[in-house]
Image (cartoon, rainbow, N blue to C red):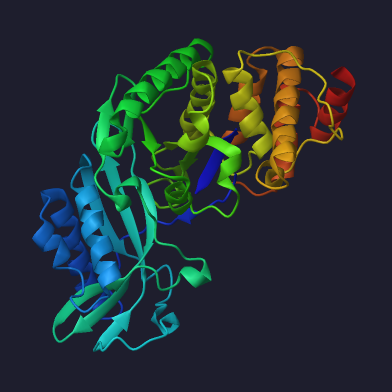
Length: 405
């Protein structure tokens, strides 16, 4: 998952899509049949059928979590939902399960979750799930989804993993929140709609039917959803998406984008700041479809800030070492250093606009984003894109930026 944040990141995860494995071990089609029943229960909002896929001998904690998950999912407007075993992608990890659960057979494959939110998503959202399946007699069940978290393999959590969701709908945006946060959701909808109006005044990128803005109930919920390993308290919002490397996606394509509001921080600021922040995140959300794996964070964040801040002129950055920040500098080192990384990026992108026109930053972004399944490092491709638009490679551009601020 690529998660791009606004300050008050960037872990990457790819989801590989292939035809569901129907050959191979005999348990695969049997477990797939269980997943098909589970997906059908989600779409039918059938709690009894959904819970029938859960092991009756699973822990009380897990069964309660599954019941809560169904409550949440039954409130979400799914247009489509499916689950597929990916035993052909990752080997069975059941050997990592430490305890005996009295099962006749156990398997822990990768499971791919795919869905679209009705009226919102133009493409699938795609996520990894790590389900432990057990057979008891002639029945298969889902027993756990957290057995390989110590290996860094985390089952995706969603806003609806924590309970019922309310959808506040607008012209270009839909805000999903807990029902208790509906008033704030309406305010956030107005703010994001205003951000979209501002964005379209300076950028003609196509948008999905609607952009989904998620409002987690706490920082800990957001942490579980984004699966982050950095301090979220430094940020006010995030845009995120996954990568689909399947044949249907042409080998490399972004999945449905999401914006997450870090409400504990965002609501502390003025309305103008909040509009600016959501404008910034909308640049990311719409930009995923035009970006690729070779775009460094300073281009992502500088471009988004340049547009959200109304295309400022380049200026000197106090405390800068004259080098543009590497990706890790946007999420580590403390608030002051992270803020410096953002300011340096905005200054460099503004310099590009000052020298090559207001559309210079977007042209570099798009030139880099067009490069997806190509050989070469991100440094090589950045050099090529800057040479195409600016006329010089990265080191020369960085040197010119230092002298031109």
